[in-house]
Amino acid sequence: MNSILKIEEVLMFLLSIYLFSLLSFKWWIFPALILLPDTGMLGYIVNTRIGSITYNIFHHKGLAIIIYFAGIFLPNETIQLVGIIMFGHSSLDRVFGYGLKFADSFKHTHLGILK
Image (tube, rainbow, N blue to C red; front, side, top):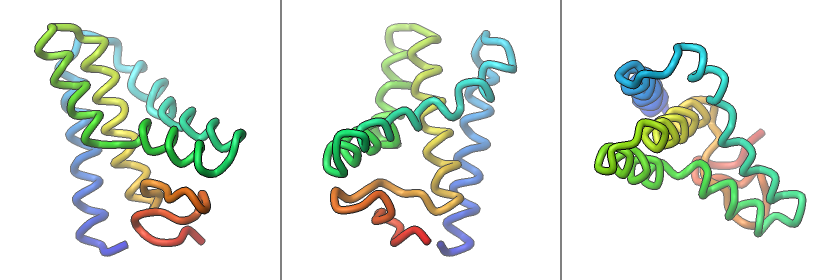
């Protein structure tokens, strides 16, 4: 992936850390939960089509932002946390080249083919 895109994703990950710091949760909650969106991969147990759907739901930044703002609107810090974790995790994944999945293969992403 282009270096400037990686820098952009790193900055978005840092934004998620900053937004987390505004919440009242203990600091260790962020690293404890940051890999939780990868449970979306469990859909691959069924097949690649279902796996790509579940993975993409758990890694969709737009959905993460909607959830975060729903938490602000309600106001509910736990909902905000869910959005922040989804957003931060997705940004970090994209730094390493893991993008949203196509239905044909786990390695076929919107960023290209994983090696």
